[in-house]
Image (cartoon, rainbow, N blue to C red):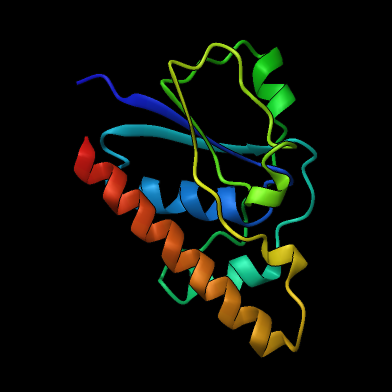
Length: 141
């Protein structure tokens, strides 16, 4: 069986796209080749690392990657899914050559305000929403 390729894109590849990549790999890595990248890769968000660790998925060693590097390498994807929030949707890049492009909007943990615990709680909500959306998408496949 040929695996379908999926690229999750966000602005910095520091939280949402990393979480989506990790969940899809865990749930259906036998069916999909999964990568993630960002428009301007930043540093991995410690909030994302912590909330993913709570689910038993360690992303602490993941590197942030540039969508432009993937493009320059000539990569092609069956699915390109942007996960920027609605206010950043205009910044989310379009990846040429994708068979199907989709947008799933999620809040950006890097913009959360409050105490560490408050930011963690909001990041857990984003994590759970990403997981739920991936499950729904897999059920459609």
